Image (cartoon, rainbow, N blue to C red; front, side, top):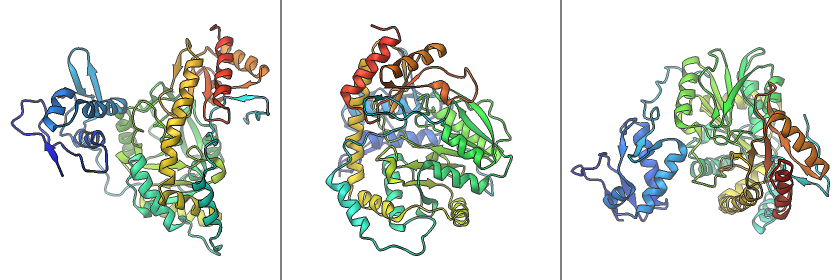
Amino acid sequence: MATWRAKPETTLSIDLPLVVDRDAGEPMSAQLVGQLRDAMTEGRLAAGERLPSSRALGKLLGVSRTVVTEAYEQLYAEGWLEGRHGSGTYVTEGVAAAPVPRPQEPTTRPAPRATQNEIDLRAGAAWTGALDTPAWRRAWRLAAGRPPQQRQDPHGLPGLREALADYLRRSRGVRCPVDGLLVTRGATNGLDLLAATVLRPGDRVGVEDPGYGKARIVLEGRGAELVPCPVDEHGLIVDGLPDDLRLVYTTPSHQYPMGGVLPVPRRRALLAWARRNGALIAEDDYDGEFRFDVAPLPALYGLDPDVVVYLGTTAKILTTDMGVGWLAGRPDLVEKVAARRMELNDRTAIVPQDALRILLERGDLDRYVRRMRAEYARRREVVVRALDGLALRGDTAGLHLVVDVPQGEARRVAAEAAERGVLVETLERYCTEPGRASGLLIGYGSAATASELRKGCEIIRALSGRP
């Protein structure tokens, strides 16, 4: 095994034991990303400290400049690094602070359906055109042969939990013990179980505004008093969060629906706020696997699993029909959620659980996600080209993007598009307060073909005043 280590006698501006291994299963750029991220997290790289150029670091480590450039681009995208014109690459202010201190005792409007002749550009759906594969059919056939169980473990099938723990570690940077993982029927079901466990009637809960409407319905159904929390192009605005919130629901990897990615300083500020106030953060990672400029960003949960409850689902990876998701959190909290689930007689069907286990254990899901990442990148490119000339946001990740259109114009364009057989939603539908945000959501994970995506977006562009 060949390794390269930075020597203390170097004249570079950092003095760290950076090691890359050509024979490891992980790409060298990913190895470098992890080591630099750890150095910043632990304070060994201070805020404002300058990093060596990609050429200099590549020469020192004995790797190509491309390896270092890819690592730097990933860390730029996550918000760890920033560039200063004509000066170089620096650690972003606020990301290299000391870890947040841990307390001694941790606290515990329906949209219309598309008809056959309509082009559906609404957000929130996964494309299933490539799903009918031999691996998919084999998994369901084998799972269907499983004998029924009289009593279910409220945590989910042990084999699936083990496979999920390994998958989340590989794909989302979530290192979760099996006893900190519970199989749900989806992210919304996981949020409902969490709310049923930790909330009391009248508890104040922060929700992103604009944000995911079904999450608001779930939380209100559990007696919460909802507190709208503004978002901007980067995601949830942490400054100004009230101190009396019991829970905050957020979508940091790709804010729904605005599309922002929560920067590292805000992530740290949100975790510090939760620690200070004894609150919990519900992280909905609904389409975190799909990013098109750099590798998918690590989940917020990885920074502080004591205060973050991580919610995921197969709905955007595979299909809503599978009906399987997961909840990851502190083992003691997960145990309380499982006990509450028993009281509610809530359960996840066994056959879909076992089918997912088979897909995970055989590596079929990983291969499918890689294939779909490329497919969604192609579909996104079709949409971006067809909307040429319009201002777009949130188009580097996920299964939708936002077209900047003034409030009145957005309603007009959506209405006229519907008359021409194109279904599209306005941001207004996702706001709790009028005028909070304006624009059009364009989903490219729907059942529309590539040619239909192009045609529908060209109609949107024309209605928006672009020839």
